[in-house]
Image (cartoon, rainbow, N blue to C red; front, side):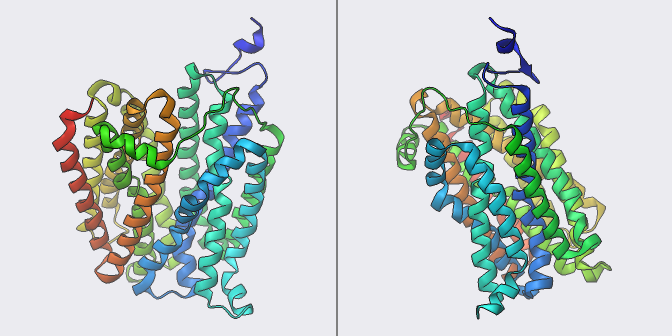
Length: 424
């Protein structure tokens, strides 16, 4: 056996046809790709208020709708993008995704001007371009999980996925902590130019080190209806899908409602909307940091107390966080750290618990189908719950949106508790 085969990257075995630079490029590109996917949640509330001119009373529903454009793009095109990646390669799609994302970020920044130029309302132009940005992003982030699978052997794939997860967490912290401060430093338009520059950096990192490495035996993924048919016979899979539908919306709802809350209430507490966006970025950084550190405890927890118990514990923590947020009137208080930590821990544990439970429940020949089903269920859940939260925020209050999410979580937890003994 050659030394090349024995080479490792952070404990991950490197195949003989790859080198460490390929892994460095993969994880580096994943970092920048994640920054691109998180940035809209940070800049969007401020952009809609200051540039597009959305009234505060409509901020929740409009922000929800725009944020859901990526989920709608995913529902419509994720299958086709996966089909393309198997036929033309991951690398070319990723490179195209970085470039097109940069183009549509700049186009999105000037959506008001573009709309007025072609005789369309700024709101309509903003919505259409945001959807196109969602399509462009769809060519970036899905490739990282696929490439991680392509680059690894089964025995060290889990570690490779964990490293990818760490880069996602690190990128989220960077986006919230650094990118979130840009509007008050260089303005809204300047922030869009910076994110466009990051797409070029991501493209360059991918260009110099990412190569296609298709597995010898590619599996044909099944359809969602096949996974749902399997779920009818498996309580464990039902639990995983229900938990995914409900809990994957925790982070999007918190990000959206909190940023809208902070931006619209900013002047009441002596801040400008741009300053509020910066503070919101720090809060989101705290959420991401908590989720990242939670993985240290959640890994052993899943194996020791079980998947379902971890799932219920995590969802209970997130629910407690949303309930506590209901009683907050000031988004800028230091006490916000308590519910933020609870939501951060809860959403991280729910993802790990649901994914592990689904993987355990899937027959070997249907693992791809089951995981694909999770992705689709996730998109549907985010669309339904995020949009509902936005409407509730506009009709009732920011606190009402948090209470709504807590209530949905409680119903899911009670159902999971009632069927827990049937889970194998």
